[in-house]
Length: 212
Image (cartoon, rainbow, N blue to C red; front, side, top):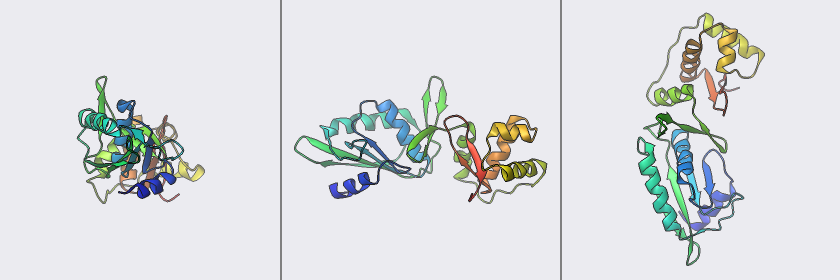
């Protein structure tokens, strides 16, 4: 990775695969971005880059790298594999480039206040993973060719999606008159079967037909 390549990456702006940080002031927050990248499609975390994409560098960036590496190793479970490089800009300033692959060990999570919290990337945002997204991450890495019976539950779902672009778990549970846990299992199974796609949200996830 060269400084020219970093500048080219930064020009793309933050998105599904790229996150900027000017400095590592709050490593406990940055590890959420790391988890989201590893859980979703992988990507780059650039330290020493402004929000507008300017590669301005960070003074003594090696110290930031030490702090962030320590946080990644101590706070995230299971351990996340990553690569990083530090590139000098001036005698005292540099930029750190982290690369995370889509992890085969997903879902990665933080263990905070007695509970596990996982995160995923949605466009240029990091969103906490719902129970459904967690299950999709867990099962999606190993299960292939999911088979399901197309019954009344699925018929009502397709009818509902014929009237709207997307549906939430709560809405599906209501229109199909299903207990929430059954509605949840049905949606998860249909995502794994590539019938639906899930769009994680801060409040309620959206489920829509694949390809729509």
